[in-house]
Image 1 (cartoon, rainbow, N blue to C red):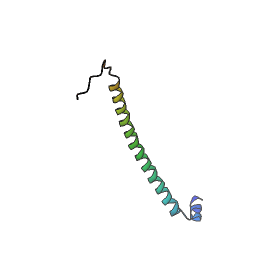
Image 2 (image 1 turned 135 degrees about the vertical axis):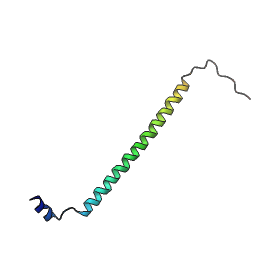
Image 3 (image 1 turned 90 degrees about the vertical axis):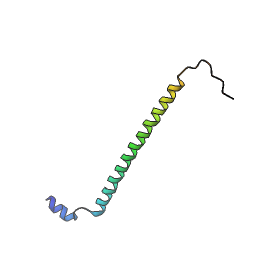
Image 4 (image 1 turned 30 degrees about the horizontal axis):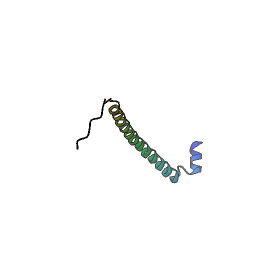
Length: 67
C-alpha cells in the first residue's frame, strides 16, 4: 500500500529535498556560529574576572606619577 501511495504521489519531490538540504546546512551554520560566540563569551568572561581581581587589590595610597 505504501509503495502504491508513493508511486501515486510521484516519490520524493526534488524541491522538498533541496529545501531540506538547505535547512540542514543552515542549522549546521548556526551551530558553528553558536560555538564561536560561546568561545568569545568565555574569553570575555575570563578577562572580566581577571580585571575585577586586579581592582580588588587594595592600595593604601596612590603613588605619584613620574613627570
